[in-house]
Length: 245
View 1 (spheres, rainbow, N blue to C red):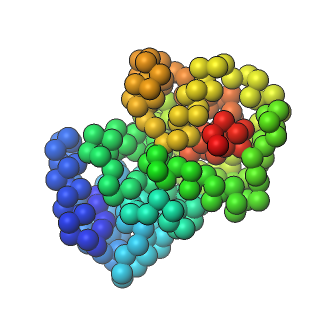
View 2 (cartoon, rainbow, N blue to C red):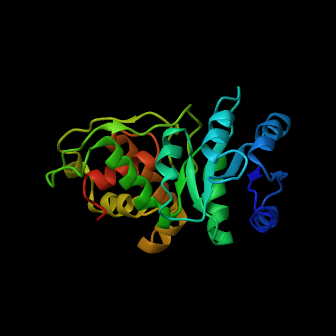
């Protein structure tokens, strides 16, 4: 389901998504319509505009997350420095997509969301992580590999993410052992750094000249070693470990 008050964005996204999925795509133009449409159609994934004139996206996000069977919700934004992004993460958003995302990248991202994973557009990734770190007052960890703690909010848990994204969109970024960075192989560090930049498994595979299945395996291993459950939490950890600057 697509929720956006701008008709060009709403209908453009609907046409793009219709082009690569057999699933029915529902589009509504106001936040007030979103909850009723979600109850009626029970969408797997909702693309929700952060800023709408009638009800702000954060309020609608809370409503959607309160449903008995809540959909996976990704926030749509025009701005890569939108101050609402960190609040949306705390409210249970599973992803953050820029409205100018290329169609082929959008397809990858929707696949991950539909499987219960989490995604961040590359231009948004640093804003989301920096906002989280500022809110928690937990700056990057020491070069030796120590990690700060803090809550990466969200609600509920989902099935294993497409591409080894892990389970759940919620919970804290737990304390990792001081030597966690030393436990990562050189390849795992490369994969984690690219994941933190918002790249999908397919894009990481292309960048590193390895197979997508290999990337999935690396991501699954990384989540276990880092003690996190999804890609957003892993991205936060990468910044805490100073793998991304």
